[in-house]
Amino acid sequence: MWDGEQPRGDEAGAVFDELYERYLDSDDEIAELSSRIEAYVEALVERYPDDVAGSPWASPPVMGEASGPIVYLCPRTPLRAPPSTEIRAPQ
Image 1 (cartoon, one colour):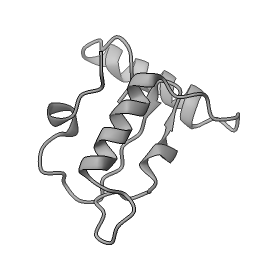
Image 2 (cartoon, rainbow, N blue to C red; image 1 turned 120 degrees about the vertical axis):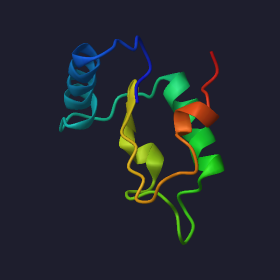
Image 3 (cartoon, rainbow, N blue to C red; image 1 turned 60 degrees about the vertical axis):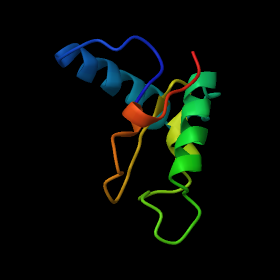
């Protein structure tokens, strides 16, 4: 998930790949989180804690999977509903 324009189809995949490579797959220092990604991850972790037994997250802490405008969410069990439909970052 990323903060920014959400194109459709193949273009969305290309944008995700570019952001992932630039911010998450790089050996460079982690970029400062966008305020919306930070708020979104905080809301997710409040709803689905990442520091308890039985946590749904495969690689906690979830905030560690975020950099700049992107977060790579790795649930190991299905969440009750898609997170983006329940939790929204402030506008």
